[in-house]
Image (cartoon, rainbow, N blue to C red; front, side, top):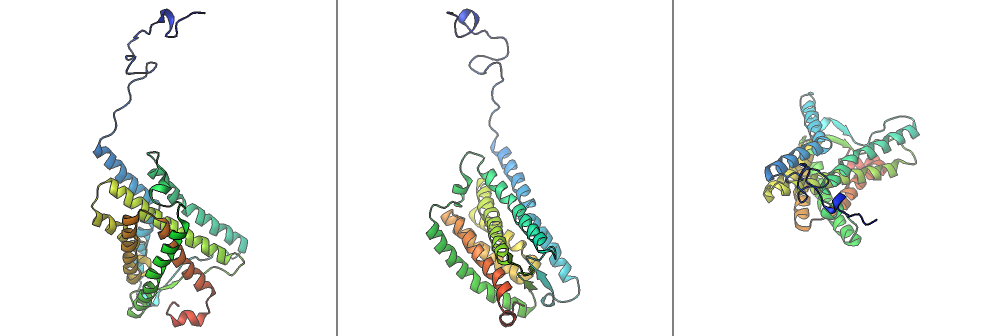
Length: 288
């Protein structure tokens, strides 16, 4: 009863572990904040790690794949690459593999969003991945898909005619009740991975590193083109152009959601259309 709050005798004593103003219960003062150079080194290492776990790794494999195709003997036009292939002849095991692949492929997206939210700010709001204006994002996304998709198909056909693009089989899943839903999920996974990492995350981090705007746009676009090199030179050029358009849109609007919508729409048309359209239709447009 009646004892002083500050301790015995009502006063705090300095026991040599720090002053009362600069420490709490004897803990040392907080470390000073890192300097700009330390922050820049951390962001640079972070970018390499994120890309090494996702699209950068895909780009390296794509380069090796292109070299292998160019040195294999037959021209590029006579070679084939397959997307969304079956992983097992047993339907439910194949479905399990497909869903696991989609789920694990999204982990770099979660990592990028987590890193962008390190300062306490919502990453999805920072890059415009939220649902604050769904109808506007949908309309812009569909418009971007048409702007990119129609010339892109023409570029693919031209590339096949020129012999600089391999034949792309967009869907080779065994027919099952889940084939179309899995192809749609695969399209959404591709869109989230590429637009969040190659556009939202990379452009924000390069902006934090104070890169100039043309260099930021070029880095995002060239990254997008590089991990499509396994399809040949035509898709590389087409995806670089797409990357410039998408990066410039993001630079102006700071919203990645319309890009996700556009990319999902493009891949759904490619994947599901390839799986469902008659063979003679595909041959007529030079897809197979």
